[in-house]
Length: 120
Image 1: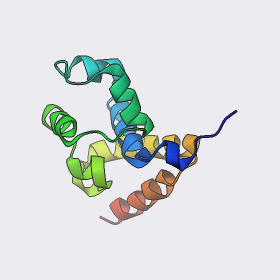
Image 2 (image 1 turned 30 degrees about the vertical axis):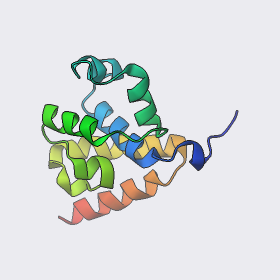
Image 3 (image 1 turned 180 degrees about the vertical axis):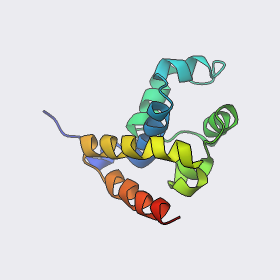
C-alpha cells in the first residue's frame, strides 16, 4: 500500500479539521457541495479535505456564514476555543480518529486542544 508523504498533503491539518467538522455535523460531502449554491465542486471539496489544496478564504467565509459556530480561526489556525463547546465536543474525537488513520501531527494538535478545553 503506497504511503502519502507530508509533501503530498501540504494542508493536511486544515483538511482534517474540515472533515472532522463535517462529520461532527453528520453531513456528507455531497450535501456541503450541493448547499454551496454552485460555489464548491465535489472534486474541490475532496481535495480540501485531503489536504492537497488549501480552502480559499472566500470558500471558508461561505462556510462560516452558512454554518453557525464554525470559525476561520478553527479552519485555518486550529483554534478550538473559537468553537461553541457542544460543537467542539463533537469534533475533537473525530479529529483524533482521522489523525490516527492518517498518522500525522494533527493527532497531537487535537490532543493538546482537548487538554486546553478541559481546563476551561
